[in-house]
Length: 151
Image (cartoon, rainbow, N blue to C red; front, side, top):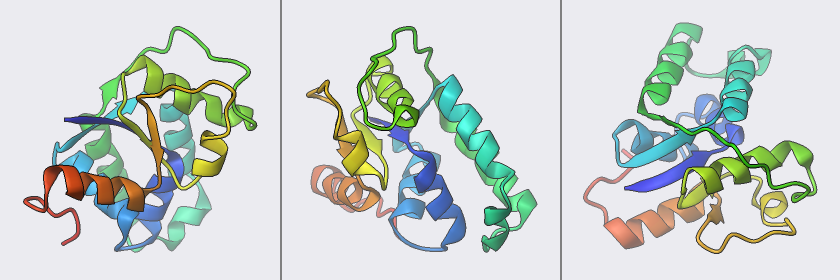
């Protein structure tokens, strides 16, 4: 099973659009086909996100968004990050994603912000940084379409 770090921008995209790669990534996580990793900093980012007025544009009601968030959290594996890789990325606020991925043995960090995440001084060869579309393409090539994440 793929171990993944799902950046908050993927969650935002999934909550604001009824279709697309962001929702497909969340579906794979919710179906148990991927194991999303969660750390303290990412959890706080998610919680902060859930309270933002931006999400009022979502096709999901607030209670539905909260239920989706809780369902996603129930599928996450909590990872304690005990070693910080600093300085690494140009945007200090993104370092925790790399640290979570390394600490949790992730196969991939899924983010719309791949340029900044790939721009670090340190390279971790087994940790891919992929957009939702690239992740889904690789997923289909590896696992086939037996569980197509797009309905």
